[in-house]
Image (cartoon, rainbow, N blue to C red; front, side):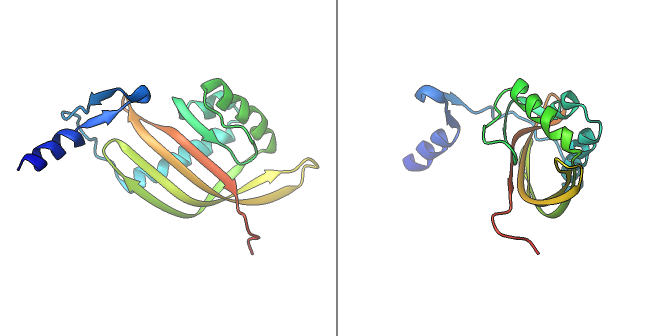
Amino acid sequence: MRRMIAFAAVSLCMVLPGGMSARADTTMTCAPVTQQEIAALFDRWNASLATHDAAKVAANYAPDAVLLATVSNRPRTTPADIQDYFVHFLEKNPNGSIDTRTIRIGCNTASDVGTYTFDLKDDKGELIKVPARYSFNYELRDGKWLIVHHHSSAMPEPVK
């Protein structure tokens, strides 16, 4: 019984940077959300690409989001860095489509991972298709689903 009580106490505790700990808020309410609603977050993001406005794309990301982008070697960890990435990416006139996906839903969190293909214009203005892997991790913040982590990488093997 003593072990069960100790385990319960530990499981409600989070370790913060610097080794400090804080109690988890056990009164948090989990907002209901469907897989279709999470899938629609990609559509929202993709539609913001179509505006060619980097600020509108960056508005999909939380202030503390991390973007590990397909065509940048540098992790983007501030709103300014994320917006800067999209200023240049939007020059390629990107349009993404989902090929495969897996959605997982937690308490005010969700992930959408899989593969997508981007239609991009190359330096000569020719349309090219770039297959890639992706992961979007979302959190519900102040009533809005925001990207907290986005990783995209070109396929490591040729795609037929």
